[in-house]
Amino acid sequence: MSLRYLTAGETHGPQLTAIIEGLPSNLTIDFEELNFQLERRQKGHGRGRRMQIEKDRANIVGGVRHGKTTGAPVALVVENNDWKHWTSVMNIEPIEGSDEEKRRVHRPRPGHADLNGGLKYNLKDLRNVLERSSARETAARVAVGAVARQLLAEFGIKVAGQVIRIGEVEAKVSQLPVDELIRITEESPVRVTDKEAEVKMMEHIDQMKADGDSIGGIVECIIEGVPVGLGSHVQWDRKLDGRIAQAVVSINAFKGCEIGIGFEAGELRGSQVHDEIMYEDERGFYRASNRAGGFEGGMTTGEPIIVRGVMKPIPTLYKPLRSVDIDTKEPFTAQVERSDSCAVPAASVVMEHVVAWEVARAFLEKFGGDSVEEIRGNLNRYLEQVGQY
Image (tube, rainbow, N blue to C red; front, side, top):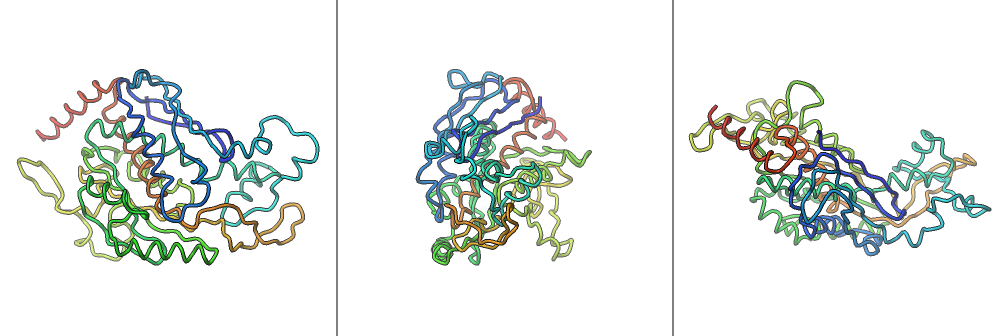
């Protein structure tokens, strides 16, 4: 069975819910580690007041017993603390009288899903769109990815991330070992290893906030310890790099993805782009460089996976943009709502987890079994086969 998940819930509803299907039995779940990953998503210089309200924790309500998965679907719940302020607005029961009309959202915000969603689903209250399209849903995706991350860790695969750019400020790219990269970025309010850039980024974010504006950036995810051969060249939708790119661009406010040197490859000669193949008895086949970011032909090469994503500035501004009222068709200035001035450090954490999910899915497609022990046997036999090639 393929690894898959669904999420449900609204940004101001009582909770976010996720169901994961396809996990093997006997995977040990570290609950503190799971909630640590959710905590990481809430950090970062530039976050708004919502992160002071929410203290995200994932409660597992199915599929785990005595600390281990059973092979049944795993159900996760992340409660919304802000729900208590929205119980009447978000009540599932019908509302009588004028309150519903008074609170109806009929002024779409530029850069959001409001207008497109209203037109598509024929909804005259745009809250029905904005509640689900909110980036709050990424809390559920991080919870799901955190479980996938633990599955990968069971087989020696490590996940890290870092911020490369915030607005006008670019950080030096770190080539540190993954464990060191995780340690240093975790201590940084903007998730960089470059201390000079860290100061400039924080000043840049503060200036944007003072100007009533927002700022985006570029983040990078590195996955180390991935075996050769995840994904496939035989069909377009089985190429793992393509699946990762789709997952990255599906994150709220992400507008692009590159793997390895990415768009830079369009400026270089072939001799400066392709990774030469080497062989040593101890290592087997390997690449002399990793400009391809761990992929050739839609399959992993055994080198670290390197993925970058670009996040646009958050569209909810304290310096509002122009829009049009869906009722009167008259122009107006978009209303101001609580928001972050910069969510790039948090987006780095989200991207780690959506990439980890896709790698875990491909890993189980290749080595799948009903239990961790069966998967380990499949992996070991495959590694032996590769070593004898």
